[in-house]
Length: 203
Image (tube, rainbow, N blue to C red; front, side, top):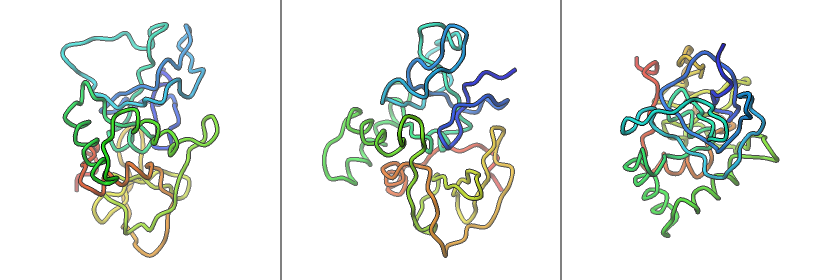
């Protein structure tokens, strides 16, 4: 039976079969029985590599951070995470540099995390969204349509699932949509950050 440590583009932590390509954390979210008891513990929501310098972890070890898994990086960014400065140092540096270039001032991890936290959560665990014209959204952004999460990629939208993108539809350009990816992350994507996506988006 899958553990409850998979994350959707809506930021929900669920039990699904697909582990995905990347992992991350939000602090210690589980109890000694490996049950999720909180939505997040810290503002520093990371997206990490599943392999780094030969390190090995016991999943959901007591009193240690909860290992969360995402289909791909685009999913993690939509949920409100950002690249880890240690295991994904190059990606983090690019993310931070693009963030700073958009805002015209230096930034560090604390500034990024505070801003992302304000943009991703409503109340204790509600997903904050914003409206945007679909044609203005960069590749790697997620939107909500018909109660599903859809990845914006090229001239298409791809329906998210834990096992990959299983449905494709044309990208329409004449209406506003609810955007799941935080506004600041959309800004970084628009400026040139290329989010990693699951290979099921390939033609």
